[in-house]
Image 1 (cartoon, rainbow, N blue to C red):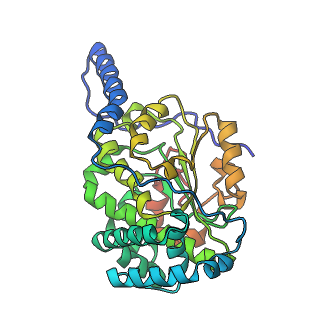
Image 2: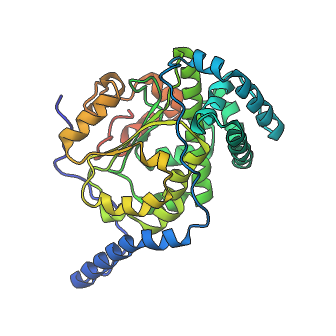
Image 3: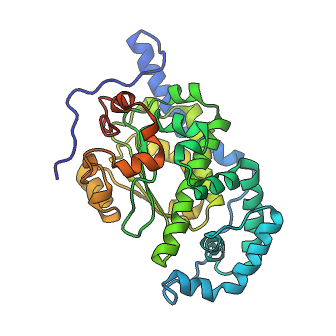
Length: 353
């Protein structure tokens, strides 16, 4: 499969900089120095320690979801009582949701109950509970929160774009064509968080639903494409106020990620990764794999995701966004002419038409 190549890219918008060449050079060097030192500063300012990494429950003895639910039936019943007492609403897919807390704490029911209590309180504060109910009622992704449409039309991404080999939902985030200052001008950090929570919840409902259908616990696969990453993407404000919130959400979604693929990662990627790494839990970090060359990136992606669920630019079979995906996510509510122009000149340009 021939991968996509761009011959004459349209340059990304750049932040205002000094006109003199020497000043531009010095500012770039200063930015890299600050970015390199930032992880050390953040580590010193961390207010709390990450949740201890548990020894995972051995899933080999109980490979099916039904066996796991039977094995932990009493604990799940008691966790359900905790969840409802705190204010959560139990639905038809609540058992896989609760099971994830048991597995993440190696079967320690008390720790699972404490974790669930904290998470449910967080879900009520952020509106995640309300979002889950909307998804189960049949709402498309764009209808869950106004910020979702703004994020997905300013940051090239394909949320819940088919399924990975394990059956869980796949989301792809492409940095080519993304301009952080533009998105920050449209959404505050709080609004961005609400939109990201809605996207997480949408994927988690798909996970819990698919788990019941397939009789095995499935998880999310995220692909982050860093092709043509530039210093413009390593915007300090975006990294510390926006990206950090995205990364920190994993503490409220235990046992929810199957893989986090970082593909086409240039040398500059390591600068951003050093900044973000202190915000990641051990469980989040262990799911990350980094691939630099196009060949290595394509191979890693196809190991995780079937071709039929991938755009052609990633070695898949989809020339355009499948109509089922466009309808489920909400792109069909956008004017066709506008959809066709989304991210024109970049990797996903024309894919939404």
